Each structure stands twice: as structure tokens, then as C-alpha cells.
Image (tube, rainbow over all chains, first blue to last red; front, side, top):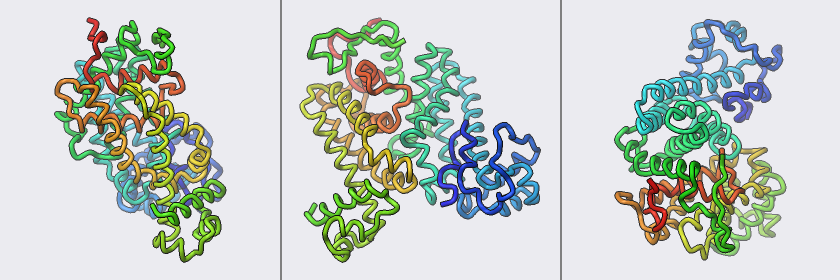
Length: 253
Length: 195
């Protein structure tokens, strides 16, 4: 498989996208150098055309010709904007879609009046966007290996890191930055789990269901986290220490 | 599981450990298991593809059987979850075959692993349910929903620890008591809301 995951790496690793087999079209172009990101007016048009192609045919059957046709530009223009060809475009699509998701999330989180509101509207927004994303849906169905790589082990850690680094500052209005980081990561885990394996009972695109989940499971967890961090008054002695009678308290800072 | 099937799966696993998923063929598995190709096809009519799916399912079962063994004898829900998270995290980090396949051919492994994940989640939820019942659920918490939520979270932390250091018993204890159980179970005597 020519682009085998490399093209869909998460933001912050653009060079990885060029590492794979760039295909015959890219013979004349070296790997795109960092920072050579074009601000061409065609950039967004090409990215949106690619998204439409992906939603119909996935990555394997989408060619630069299809993308150019969809964007209403010439092949030469596509290569001017993305010298790395298809792989570079796919990398840019992932970056752009992540940025769009984060920016929509930022709006919801910024508008929230309190912590519960922030969590509920953030989870609903992210879940809805993931569910309604047609290109993502096509890939999950027909090329799951392109998507799943981001949801397991090291790649998943990077995705959790990116999402929580972005959302944590919004939550820090109501808690310490350290707690906000943990809570942001936790909310990301919840969104991803239900996005990957939807539940018949728990639909996180529904604000009422999500509010109940947040009230039941998340808010008490945040309170306990806060209590444990601020003054370890709940018993968090791990099982390993209990038998020895050692009193160990959380020293997390 | 009958003996032949078991033998073929163990042999296939040995081949995967040596050569990876993509390069393991029905012939390799047959030779390793000391059976004929025809026997492999009788046990796995789908051939290589079925064998790959089956060996991932089998290795997953072995993993969770060990996990179950590891938490046997725990006396509380908290202890079950602490031991389980700690052991699962260590086993994955130290699982050479899994780590190598994830490095070299994740695209072969992940679809099969994801296919398994529903069954795994239900297995974890089923395992935790009696402990939850015994521990006592917080008001308004539904057992099935709580067990499913915990199973999802456990899988998430096992697959990617994120900011949590699952080698540190204090952090594991905190994770279990805060993010995992605080909303699910009733407060224990002596640890009532301090406010």
C-alpha cells in the first residue's frame, strides 16, 4: 500500500507524510521542506476537493487528476501548491480537518458559562463532527487501517496530546492547568471511545444524553481529582502499599 | 477449542513472532504445526486471512485470560482495577510480538484488533459487574451503563496512557479513584465528601 498510514499522521509531523512512496508523479519534487507551506488561494480549494474525493473513493482511488478536476484547477497548479503530490495533500487534509475541528471546539468552549456546559458542548460538538464527517466515514468503512493507526498505542497518545493541549486552556478557567490537562484528555478519551465503537444507549451527539453522562461520571471524577490533588483526603493508597501499612499520599504537583 | 485448531493457532503465532503478519503463510503455519496444508484449510477454510484474524483473536484471549488471573483474589473493586491497569500496561509495553507488529505492520493488525475490541469491552464489563454490584453503585447509576463506561475507559488507558504514568502505583490509585470510580460507586465509609 503506497501511503500506508504515513499520509494521515496527526498534526505536527508533516515530514512523515513525505517519507512514504510518493508515487510516479512526484519524481521531480524532493520531500517538502518544513515551513514551505504555501499560502496559495488554491490551497483550501484543493483540500476541500480532496475531502469530496475521499468521501466518494477513499485514498486508494483518489488521484491528483481527480483532485485537480474537483477543485477546478490544473494539475500543474496542484503541484505548485503541493509539490509532494498526493501524499502531501493527504497530510494537509488531516492537518486542516484537525484545525477545523479544534477551531469549532474552541468556539463552543469559549462560549460556555460553566464547566459542565463546556464539557457537554465540547463533547457533543466533537462527536457530531466526527459522526458527520463523510470522508472519515468512508475511510472507517473501506480503509480502516488508515484511521485506526491513530487510535491505538503511540499514535493515540499523540492524538490525545494534541487534543488535550488545545482544549485544556479553555478548561483552566475552572481548575488548575494540571487538572485541566487531565480532564481535557479524559474528555478526548470519551469522545474517541464512543466515536470508534458507537453505543446504542449512549449517543454523545445528543446534548441530553451527554449532559447525563457528564453529570454522572465526569463531574464527580473531577471533584475527586481536585480533592486528591489539593489535599489528599480521599484514600488513594494503592493496593500494593496497603498490606505493608504504609501511609502514602499523592504527591502529584 | 479442539487440539488441532489450538496447535495451528500456536504455530501461526510463532510464525508471526518470527516473520510478521504479512509474511506468514498457510504453508508456514502447517509446517510449524506439523500438519498438512489440507488440515489447516479444514480448520480455517478462509485460509490465510481467516488464520490472521483467528490468531489475533486467540492472542487477545490469551492476554485477557492472563489479566483475569492477575486480578483473581483482589478483595475490592479498586484493587481489581489497580492491578488490572498496572498489569495490562506492563504486558503491552513488554509484549515483543505486539510491539513489533505495531511498528512494522499496524495496518494488518489494527482492523483485526478493532474487530475484537467490542468483544473485549463486553468481556471487561462482564468481569467488572459483580465487583460493582458488591461495591454498591452511586444513586441513579445503571449497572450495565457503568460497566460499559468503565470498560471503555480501561481500554482507552491500556491502549494509550497519555498523561498518566501507569508504572506509578500512586498515580494508578488516583486514576482509579478519580476518573474511573468517583461517579460510579458510593463513597466508602470514612471518605465522604470532605466539604
